[in-house]
Length: 76
Image: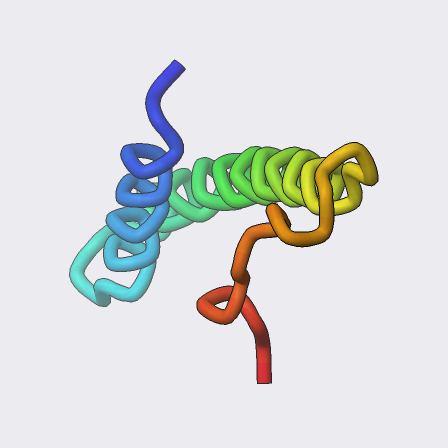
């Protein structure tokens, strides 16, 4: 299986292909179908990673003073 980043790059390429106006409709549709499948797979993988991060962050075995600083990940 390809790395996440490689599959994300492929998804971006497919998006560019779909936006082109000089390709046949069947080629655009094929790229769209591949893109949808790829996007769903990437989303599932991100959900798994997010779950793992939540588990790690909620680990009550770690002393409070050893909790990681997550300022970079805070959302506004």
